[in-house]
Amino acid sequence: MSLKRIIIAGAIGTTFMTLYSYWASKKEREQFLEPALLNELADDTEVLPEVNDEETNPMGWAGHYAQGVVFVAAYYYIYRSALQKPSVAKGIFAGAVSGIIGIAMWEVMFRMSKNPPKTERYRYYRQLFIAHLIFSTSAIYGYRLPDFIKQLQEK
Image (tube, rainbow, N blue to C red; front, side, top):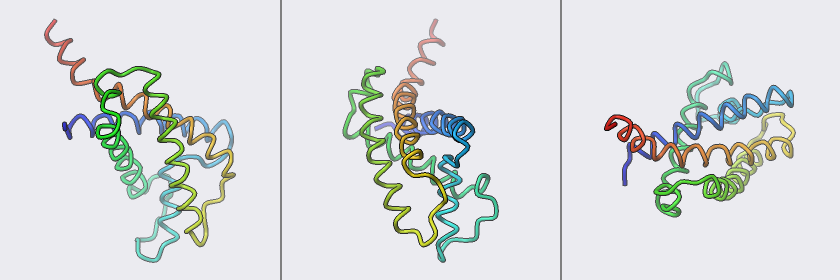
């Protein structure tokens, strides 16, 4: 396993997913930004420190990017061929599975919260599913990025 590749791919996938979430938030005029929602959920707990700014607090961002790395690590163990020979079809398949898992995880977090973020869940989950398609496809290609860079350097 290449931890460096998994971290790079997780960061790339999470970045593209987050850019899409920003765009969808603006378009739908809803809060769909995962780090902000994570910060709202964290602020609802008594164990974590108070969150003053949901969009910029590093706790939500760190959690969001860490989860991206966890998803890529899961791809490595479960769906290694997608990382070795990436394709859009493999990215979409991995994204659909990841999207369903992500939606289930968010639903659990929302239900466990005493005061969940005010977002229209159906619209959020629709956006989240698409965001996971973007995440997985860009993460799968991101996993191969070091090979691509090496090939460019050899030319």
